[in-house]
Image 1 (cartoon, rainbow, N blue to C red):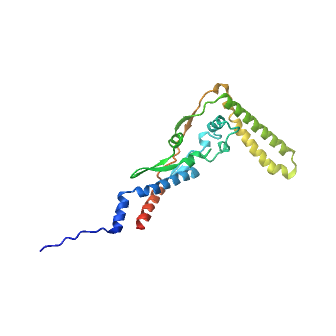
Image 2: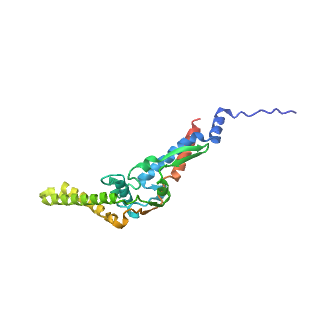
Image 3: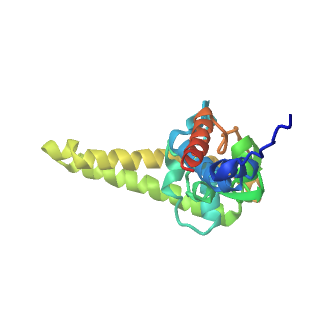
Length: 232
């Protein structure tokens, strides 16, 4: 007895699902965007997944003296305010954070990272060099240190002349801020040494993973696939 053979038609939905699985290029932009968002979150939390970044105090970078040198080398009259902060690790200028991007490079591959030349050493750790400490940098630094000291002295004088509640109110807070800034500036006086003129100093960086694949990212990618396939 002859038995008829009927061909199997997988149907439009199954063909669409198979197409998504065999050619994942549709997902690369979504995955890239997710990885960028997790990198941005790393700056806020100062960690990537379960890997905590060492903060500035742990690495002796309060104030961030290599950054201060770079600011004066760029012609600034004083350092960026973030150079003197204890928090906001890797966010002195905001350039690194804003540079994180993605690009599909193959049918099944997306790259995520930064094109900035210093991004690699900040991500993986290593050593870099400061700008050359020119005499003009040292002069600008010395002038700024002196100016911070003068500001602190004036703030102290104003507070001491105040009476009653004024002495412990805004004037006291202003004096405290000025003195703290002066103290930080004074910590950089070692960079004024004539023996450092013309030198580039080595700077060691701990690994602070900026881009990674933490477990929560994997779950989000699974949701991306599930939502897309479920909508077919």
